[in-house]
Length: 461
Ligand code: NAD
Image (cartoon, rainbow, N blue to C red; front, side):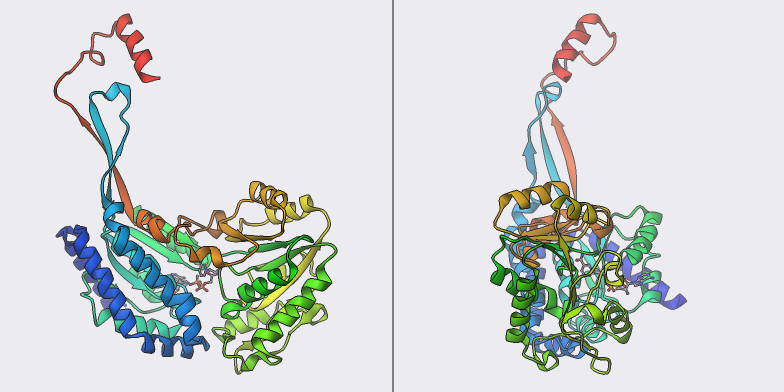
């Protein structure tokens, strides 16, 4: 343990020395490194595919669509725009500071640590790192040990192709992360559960290190009678059962307006059959649960009396069928914590105000979805409920748009990233005022006179 800590100290110190050499501040250098990262990932796609399949049977199609493409897109965007993002931005100067000019100067923070989660192991570790590098920082990545093969693959691919003083993957679990967190970083970016988020923030507090916390929670989807039923069912089934339900922004539960529940369930059943067949265990598009601990945790949520679709499981295969539960109440076990698995409870509502209150009585969700044809429903819900981000007549897809900052609020997280928001998250913005030396009125200097105060009142308010 001691020697690991020493190695981490050395690693962090070497990154700090490298950062202080100012090399990473050069925008052409940053673009070259991002280009290199993209080409290294592209040329190792097969290895990355094989590793993620070993971890939870995720297909290469899904690995591309939900992991690698997002990283490539972030890289392309940053390579195209980082020069513009990094330039100083002029702002207006107030009257009391005239004559002079004012501007904001973005600068990198320094040595950054990104701690990833296992459910989208590549994307959640590398997309923040793209932002960190684009902003001119150095980066250490600690992927989740639960997705062991992808963690190894990332370490092999990155550590073989980058100098550790600039970009390095450290593998390990709680012990290694705890040791790493003793070091002083200039920024920590964490994705995972709120419980560990608290540990990360506590460790960061010792060094006054700023943190971004990308956490989870129970994300509701409202479905109204005026929703386009077939499209709603199709999109909900995709979003919920993608990655075996192990998606932080998956619709955790449905709040369905009274009058259309049976039709919705029927339509969801058809969609599941269409996309995963009558035995989803054989479907190439159906991902497994990450480990036996999570398998047991999810199985406890399934009340067989309430299952209307699915319910089957196979522990050896770590398989849980796409499952829908009806007549669920907020008191049921499945409603006590984030499901993070392929189980979708349905709660029916009659009174929208009551349904909104039930959501607001709980932690602020990471995502919220509304399926409706009415702007009135959408506007009311968006006005009254606080949540990270969301979509109208869709779910999950908002995070594919890099122009939308992605992050939570309250228990679902703090800070955001993707696109320019990621660059900002890993930057400090220096505020500079440059004063002309042509004149120097005596207004602010003693002796203070009633006349000076009169002028000050005019200028300062
Ligand atoms: P986790 O909190 O168990 O683990 C995440 C990381 O923290 C791992 O790298 C792990 O090694 C490290 N870690 C675990 N215990 C630690 C400890 N005691 N001290 C220091 N480090 C420790 O989270 P998870 O199970 O990987 O993820 C599940 C949660 O994450 C869900 O709530 C989900 O919604 C959320 N999540 C959020 C997002 C997002 O983008 N907002 C994305 C994915 C997952």
